Image (cartoon, rainbow, N blue to C red; front, side):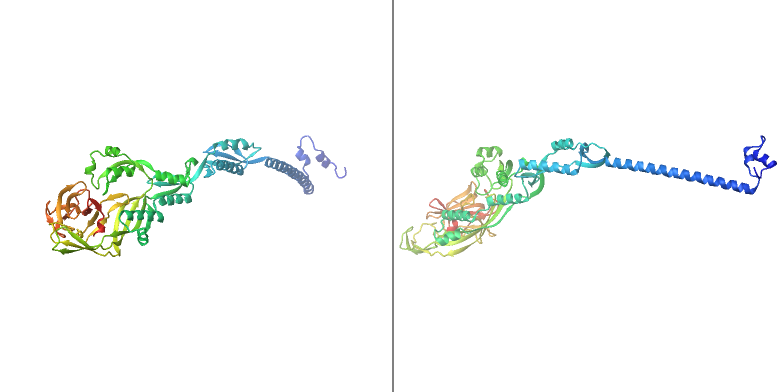
Amino acid sequence: MKGFTGKRWQLWRGDNSRTQEQHSRPENDSERSELESGRKWSDLLKSRKMVLAGVAVVVIAGAVYLTGQQYVKANTVSYYRVYVGGKEIGTIASESQLQALIERKEQEYKQKYPDVDMAVHTEGISTKPEQAYKAEVDAESTLSELYGMLTGYAKGVELKVDGKVIAVVKDQQAAREVLERVKSQYAPEPDVAASTLAAKVKRTGGSATAGAKTKASSATLETVEIAEDVAQGEVKSDPNKVMSSEEAVRKILQGDEEAIQYEVKEGDTISSIAARFDVSQKELFANNPGVEERTLQIGTLLNVKAVQPALTVRTVEHVMEEIVTEPQVIVKKNASMRAGETKVISPGSSGLKTMEYRITKENGMVVDEEWLGQEVTKKSSPKIVVRGTKVVLGEGSGQFAWPVSSAKMTSSYGERWGRTHKGIDLVSSKRNILAADDGVVSFVGTKTGYGNCIIIDHKNGYETLYGHLSKISVKKGQVVEKGDKIGVMGSTGRSTGTHLHFEIHKNGSIQNPMKYL
């Protein structure tokens, strides 16, 4: 207790009337400083302990958190939700599972339909990636359900005319092949054209010589095209509706039954029209009330219900035809010979000339014939005949002149390209009709199909007929000479326009006028 005496001791011990703060308060600055210093050091130690304790807590908490995160991450599953048309049908582990399923379905369809290009409808199928802790993915069930929902289709190309589908084929190459094969059905092969022309030359009196045959068989196909605008487009189709090229060609050529209007052309009859469309005459008359065979006019529109090809193939052919020309007849008069008596001094010889045409056909039927001209390839030698001068009035020479000046032929003679024509049609800016040879008018009036008509008997076995006249300038029984005006060109009867229809008959048999003109 050194240093503490008297009052100081009492102060240190304190008494009941002082507070603890008063008991512990130093009495001088030195003591207070020592005391404050001790307190600060104690507080510092306490603070450090608290910090260390906090750090320890943080470290422990962090370790626990990281451990938990790693555990959660290790047990998190990535997967995909599968939707069809916006409706969820299940989950799969990866998109490759979906792709493999589609490929398997496509392979199944390709095995079932090996002749077409098959694919699977995938429109409306979508996936959405997801992640979840210990998620359960039932890919097998999802893929099984989806497999049953997948449907297949054939990739094809459709051919359309005026919005109507006429065939569906495998691809663009098949479409081109079909159109080419349809065109080839109506594009004549050279050998076919040659044989057809050779037969026609035989019917019209053509020469049988090798040179004549060569010229007669000259036919060139200028153009072949499909008249309609055929649209082509890729399409998803029922595989059973995709046709092979052969099936498509057959369907297009067979066509469908439909109602059409047919315009009557020169040479047409009810029977020929019925045969052309493979219908009965009775059906034609039933569909066209008021139409009669004897009053059938060129240009009349007939309602026909027939099977028509789905496409129209238009061909243009350049035809060279060689025909025999009759020799010119030179008549030397002999006053001592009785009328009607003749004597041949020189028989003469026939000549050859090449006729040139441009023929337009639609599906093998002639729709237009253009005469391009003619060229003499072999001149005939004249036949010289001595004839008595005591002739009966109106007896012709047998040498015919053109019945129209500056004439142009618009339609030729004979069984030509599927229709019958008994004479030739001529047009000219000079419309007067002239007698082709001396003769006597044996008929004046109207004949079915010919309209206003004149027939001249040449008193030598020949008769000439002049049809479609607008005006007749002679009377029956009138004697005419070669070159006399007998009428005016017109368009009466079955006529499509103003022209002269001219025929030559020999002993009642129809002749090709071009053999004499």
